[in-house]
Length: 369
Image (cartoon, rainbow, N blue to C red; front, side, top):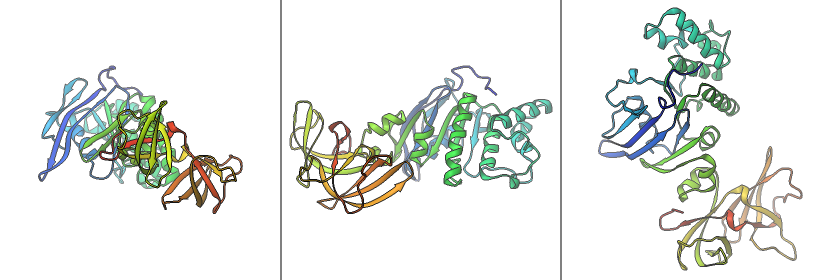
């Protein structure tokens, strides 16, 4: 099943969107460009503006300023039902008294599509979501995942140019949610449709997206590929929201031989990749990802690193999580492959080794890298 639009028809451009409610700025000049067939996730804490952005695209809200272009043309004055968009909701929004066939074909029936064409499109959509043979069932006879796939099929039957999804998997249990993430990405890539996906779940965004747009207080904090946002966060907020990290306060000592020498507030000294933007004496905020820390037992010849004690240890399938209590009372999160040799136990004295390139360094005054 493929859309009828050309390569530019699924492009979506949001230009400097501004929106206020009751004198409170909800969007502060948000600009996003989605290429044809691209999967973009809008991520951020509650109240950051991601759902308002989706509602403006859908035509449920009108921006105070800015424009929305689909295929290069403004759709601000186009009613929502004429915008050629598909919508998938958190609540499935299926009609309980209708069969799967009638639910999926509802949009086409409202458009007075010929019956033969409805049969063709509904059949193609159900095949796409692996629900062929379920046409005569009612929503109550389906699992949560099957109901959500019916909702996706219904959105696809009208052959939209862009599909909008508002936390569609949040009501599912953890195992089914992971399965549906894979299924949803498969369907989107098979159809080749542009997708805008709203979620507060950063792991889900990392799994699904070609690009992530991380929003905070009505503005875009950072936008980019999942791997870039994870490994090169532009601010302390990004590092904390996308993935896990342990944070430290420190002061720049000097930059020499391609390394930044930094003194942590507890007196420990660490080396990070060169930071030419920060002069000696500059207050810094450092972060490190749990998978970038290597634990070694403390021996008579203690290697360089952060000394501490394993305060907690948990086996989590393919890896083991350690919480290391440092001398100043801070906790360091560590994630190690479960297959690693000689993993420390709770109560063991350890040293955490961190490579210079694995430290994330931010300006303490602004939280920016």
